[in-house]
View 1 (cartoon, rainbow, N blue to C red):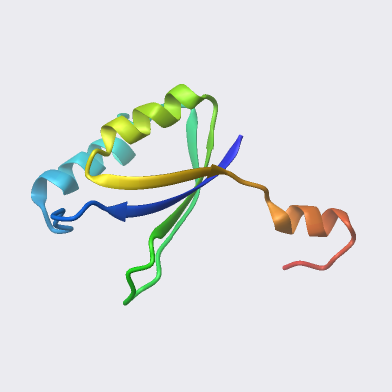
View 2 (cartoon, rainbow, N blue to C red):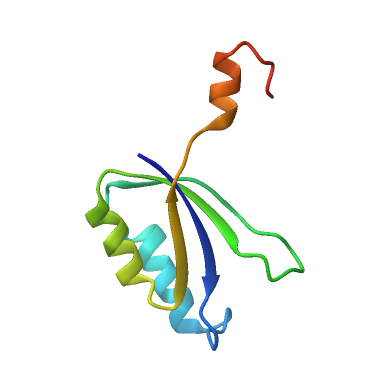
Length: 96
């Protein structure tokens, strides 16, 4: 199922923190991310307090729970999502 998450670091989290960088490397490169989570996109707005947006597919709610438990430094607002561009294309609209 497709999900969208609005993501912010919790107050007091430092982006340059070496431990957070090592944790990220383990998640993305070394297999700590559950196999059922597939990243579709990860976007952020520069120079604002706007939350980052993480678009992903998850095989189960258990995989999402593991993600939330792993990233205790991060606040998540996760919602089921629809690919609206695909819906518009299916209606014959030239969405590029």
